[in-house]
Length: 335
Ligand code: KG4
Ligand code: ZN
Image (cartoon, rainbow, N blue to C red; front, side, top):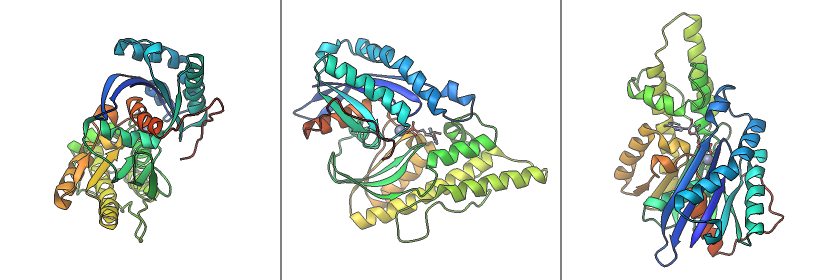
């Protein structure tokens, strides 16, 4: 089965073609094209929704035909069209949903609605031989959720951030330090040359029985530290701030994941989303998984950030259960 997928929930316009061997359920990503809008939004220090929608509208057709070309196929060869319809920026999602709708109905192809978070988690099926049930952490610029993945399509969110997402925490602190949007990847590099014990910051794991996080308290503590140092004319070592912040984030994330693993008794952990690209988090999780004797699946860097290959993969499982959309498919901003 050949699936064409479209992703436009935030600041990346993406299209991909996945081949699925329905007997083995192995995926082959024939092409995955991503048009990033980062350079445009960097001018404003964050994503401007209106600009994102317009940039998606401009890019969608071009990158979809590029994905078809790269895969060496034509639209008529595609068996189904999957599209990310929620959650995300409403205007951005609508451009992708409407484009996919037009493509599907004009060419008489089934249209598959895919939840973006489920897509991030499905990225882990591309390179790993894992099957639900398992525990998953979706960590990106817009979301931080601990999810009980009961089956390929049945997900229960059992923990979440009560305020900022983890990627947002990195990006907002980076901005105060004068690092260009989105600062997460840059702070990852800075942290490699910093002392992770230099500064003590408060945990983002909420100190109660829930599996919830709160990254806004941590963000404020780091920003206060930076402002205080500035007022006292003290030197700020961006490397030490990045390393200390990253250490706090990694420990906070693992604290609640351990609690969730112990509660559910699963032997597999999936970590996905843009922040799963963080090298320190990947190392910390590897050590944690070895200690707990569980399987750890984290997508390759190219499938951590927003992409359409992950939408195609989740699209396959949605298609299998008959989740086909009609012409009234709408975009939904909330998870
Ligand atoms: O999944 P994603 O591409 O988009 C959303 O769905 O939000 O995630 C983007 C987020 C941004 O906050 C970005 O700073 C963060 O992922 N990010 C990182 C790294 N690479 C991207 N954060 C920490 N370390 C990284 N290496
Ligand atoms: Zn995402």
